[in-house]
Length: 199
Image 1 (spheres, rainbow, N blue to C red):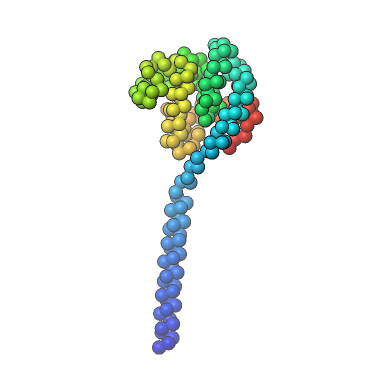
Image 2 (image 1 turned 45 degrees about the vertical axis):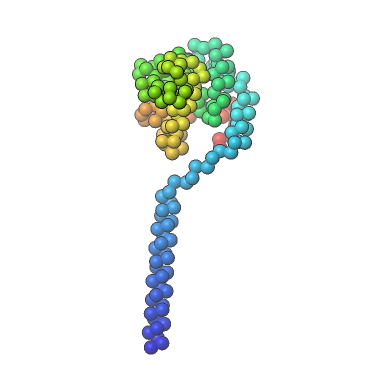
């Protein structure tokens, strides 16, 4: 009788252990499938990067000037001064180089406008509602064009869950490996130019 009791207790313990093991494996699978949390960038780090890039302003202006033959040095300076107000200034400059060659009044065959080549047919209502522009023509001005491009790219970045390459494809409106490679190559050059490290 005692043997039977011990046997049934043992079976009960084994059963409980199996439940715990299966539950643990399930939780592990769920945790592996769950995307890691996106940690906010400390404000001090953002300020530090802006300060470092700000000190590299003349070098960045010269780089912009060397990448376009249709704008003055003063325009280059204004573009850099406006761009460094944002959290990802080097990426924005890299996008501008490929999209518009830093020409504020650039217009594509698809009617994309300005430095960041924003599509007004898609974004103008949203941009007007956000107070970024008052009308489409504002995209030809340096400040609202960069602000609009930054806004659109950040939405693309959220959509891609932080994947920069996919965000660039969304910004372009389709897959284009050459497009993405050109932007990331320029970005690498700018990080070296400003003596910064990728975080």
